[in-house]
Image (tube, rainbow, N blue to C red):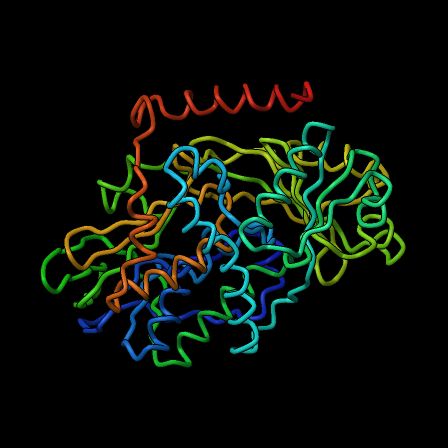
Length: 427
């Protein structure tokens, strides 16, 4: 039987590490077993292995097979809901505590890249681009909000100043976050897997978990093997399936689409993104883009609720790309793919415990690159006996979607249609 392969993305085609790890075929023991070799699982594994724990990671497909290896590759701070929303709904104390952690994920990424010499083309600088005056005012408010939580690497840009960063007439202005950035996500996740192994951890691919026996020492079953552990971390996120039914109703898989152009000339690259920053706009159904290390434009956006595989990704994304950069009209698209992220009703991550020794983190709602890395550190802390930061997240309510499994997709799509209409009307 052939081994599972990555989706046919630009990242998979240009990945540094092509080797395939073995599947689990024996009964082994470890302090920690982690389900899922994406950013949440591998950040957890690194932080725990660095603290002396023996760690086993089980991946159903390949390292970085899910969202961690398919995303836009942008460091965007905070959460899908910002601290003002959190404070309004859950109180000032929770807002303050989450604000203390909101900018940590990016620092963790940079620390891992440096400490483990990960070649992922990490570059500094990210821009939020406003499509209208209301969005620009919202960016002014974001700047003040983030600065009130100690984040001061921000520069507000008017329309003329933004043109020095983004060669498009589409925007009214923007906000430059100097501590934002971008990188090759599959190379990062594979580099983190190598870091786990350098610390003595073991990673098994093609090792889908089919059953979990809870108890004082959980037993995790795959088709051909078992892991007995002291602590279990469930980090499958949008690709967990129905393995843990009590988590399934709390969040919904959604798809986002990405395309990658042919290699652009140096003149084109300088025209589109003169400072080589990454960009995301401020619409509810946002566009995001950046240049690859070799000069391709990577452009993403669009949402399919319920994670349906779109049959024509290019037809969904190319019109948006040409709206931003009409000068690319005759540019060839070499790659197009989709990937799933996990959406929660309140758009905030869900952390929690099942019994005394099973932990989970999921539902980053499209804001996962930094939050997953933070989650790994926080999960390592709670397993080592410091639950303070974990309990901040775990204390947030975790509501099921209205309509249950049957109607959650149309209900959510209706809401997205409403907000998308507001974007188009400038509201």
